Amino acid sequence: MANENYPIIVGGLKKIGNFFIKELKYELKEQEHIATGKLFNSFYSDIYEQFGNLYLDVTSDLDYLWLVNDGASMGVDVDEATIKSWAAAKGIRFNNPKEEARFAESVVRQKLFDRAFEQSGNITCLDTDEYFDGAMSKEQLEYILSENRNTLFHTQWIQYTDTNTVRVDGPWGYNLKDRVGSYSDRGIFNDASMHSEHLPVPEKQAMINAPNLFIAHLQWMDKKTVAVKQYYWKVVDYVNKIEHGVEIIPTSAYDASVNNFEWEYEPFEYPLKVRSDVYDLHDIEDSFKYKFIKESIEKYNIPNLNDWGMGIH
Image (cartoon, rainbow, N blue to C red; front, side, top):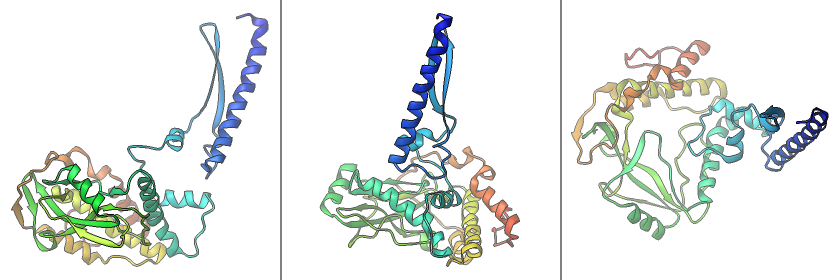
């Protein structure tokens, strides 16, 4: 490259870089993707020479740039505090602390439902420790949904403890949950501080009996993991009561659920479809639930809410 042309070309590339940055900022404004302004102000141009040629890059150092643009097919982990901070930056205001406490769950669930409803009226909502199983085919389920619009379906919640063993003591012997619905009209979630409904409740409800369809629930596969999970909800409720004065589930409800790990078992004809030692693949003490428990105990001086002798508190 001739030296006399170098400053001219660099100057031209700088102008082009500024133009692209201006257009990117305009696009963020048009898409209403500005909250804190961090992404908006993060763009920069970089001009460099390689093998005798000049190159221009316009980029951002923020790793969520493409999440904002494209979304994330595998999901994004955020906590309640982050969602509330985002809401404040977007100018969303609450009339009282209870309304603020409800926002993170009810609004985000509604947004997820609405996005799914754009694609199909057949909507499922499973927890991360659940999957559907049973004798029914996908095509058979879709036919039932197509013939029963605006209907929420309940099916049996099967509590696996091992490959062919399920928990059956107390309410776990026969427990129905709603995880699939057919909607021709947009469903609306009710406000809830915690533990809200998985799907909006339409005008009709029905049941699909096992073994045609059931929900495989893996919560009880590892006792230490489930103890941390249940104790986490105890602590979350305790903190929400302090910070927002919201109604909470009493700790006795979690104790009844765990039943001091004195469980009854039965064999089950449909074998588990994941490896039985799946919870051994991660360190529970490195999980956000365990860390939240420890941080909250120290911050709020929380007494032992009964950790079932598992050494969690």
